[in-house]
Amino acid sequence: MDSEQRPLSSIDEAFERAPCGLLATTVDGMIVRVNSTFCGWVGYQAQELLEKRRIQDLLTIGGKVFHQTHWAPLLQMQRSVAEVKVDMIHRDGQKVPMLINAARRRHADVEYNEFAVLVVIDRHQYERELLRAREKAEVALEEKRVAEEALREADRRKDAFMATLAHELRNPLAPMRNVVDLLRLKNFADPQLLWARDVLDRQMVQMTHLVDGLLEVSRISEGKITLRRESLDLATALKYAAEACQSIVAAASHTLTVALPHQPVFINADPTRFSQIVQNLLNNAAKYTPDGGAIWLTGRREGEQAVISVRDNGIGIATEHLPSLFEMFSQLGAGLERSQGGLGIGLSLVRTLTELHGGSVSAHSGGAGLGSEFIVRLPLSNEPDATAASHVPDPSARNATRHRVLIVDDNEDAAESLAMLLQAEGYDARTASDGKTGVRLADEFSAEAIILDIGLPDMTGYEVAQAVRQSQSGKSALVIALTGWGQKQDKQDAELAGCDFHFTKPVDLGRLLAILAGGSVDPAA
Image 1: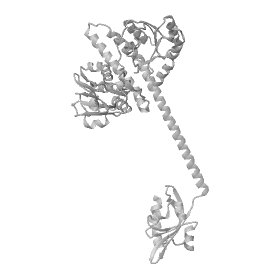
Image 2: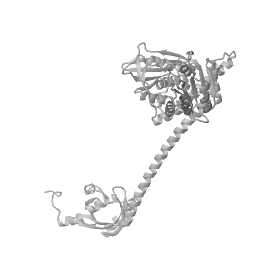
Image 3: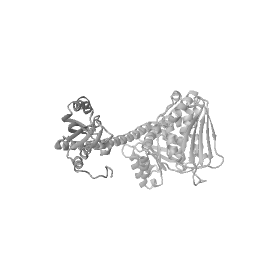
Image 4: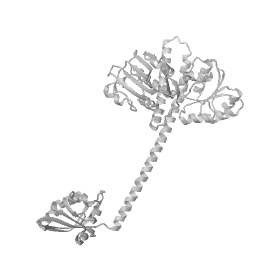
């Protein structure tokens, strides 16, 4: 029978169950015997201590110093030490004050140190410390809860700020956009006037992209981007995206070559978000390619994937920059010198939107000065629909069935400039600067289409829409919300109020005219 199976003798049992801690060590401190009382005080099992730890290993730094300078020498000279108070470290890291008596004895010609240990914690003090520890834990949990709530509140404030900022920027952009479109209807003999108009046009496009980018940062970080998928014809969708970027490409005298698949290729995608993917890549190519460069847009089918490639002969990408290219706010050092402005979120948005569609995007370049290529891969639509919506506006549609248009906007510049644009297109357009006047004119004028700002001085655009819908003539009118508020909730509120469409400022004139002409165009911006 081995020692583990042998029943305890009365001496062994007394050692094991003694109310004080008992242990024996070799002269260098290695523990060779220990009872359960001591093990309980320090939080270890006997097998974790025996022949594995020295008693000084359980002491605090100060205790170890005391052991080295006083305790060990006294045991060697006087053979005993009485009532030495030291702190030992519990397994969980807490200090345990102990009172130690030690003696050096010889057994079978081998010397051992024998220790009798008492815990000297005051029970009431211990309970008070325990209570304080619990209170600290509760305070820490409350502080954590408050901090998390503060973060959520900061996030809500950030979203509100971003939405308000976008709204405030869009309001002045709207009349500026209208004026530029008005200037395009004029024939200028002076080449400087033509140049000035084109500069304003390009910078307006850039400003609009920046404002939209501000909102996309918030949507990306919060995971608030949602997709409205439908079956899209790849060739048609790429044509529209290329046309939308034509002004930026032309401004730098680039040549854009578009190669589309000969056979129908369908993808299940959000048309607006897909257009964003392609437009961001084309804009990126235009910005980082020296004037007079070449850009190629290609769409094709590879297996069960639709592959979109945007290639240029621009400044290229150094190999070390490729891994971080799609990170938020990332811009290449060399590119900063050529960049026409931006927040560095375009490629990050491309990756996010592509991955939301179940696809992937990659960047390739031979190095600085050797151009670059971005390749987007998207899964094909499982159920191709030959009548998939093209979402290509028809700017030439001018035979409007809705001739009488009322514009309700307290921004006089925005209202008058838009009215002038519509009048130039053959519409009978009138304006109102507040909600009550708008409701009255909608009835008196028998408006066939009403373009509403939302932030009016006396009532909201939503309330105007509801009031108009209650009148006999307003039931059949086309109601369009045109506002600087462009969040998802704003669009839902517009729909609930009875609006047929929701545009964000500045409005795309071609799309607005297509809507007024009775066309089916997705107005999402």
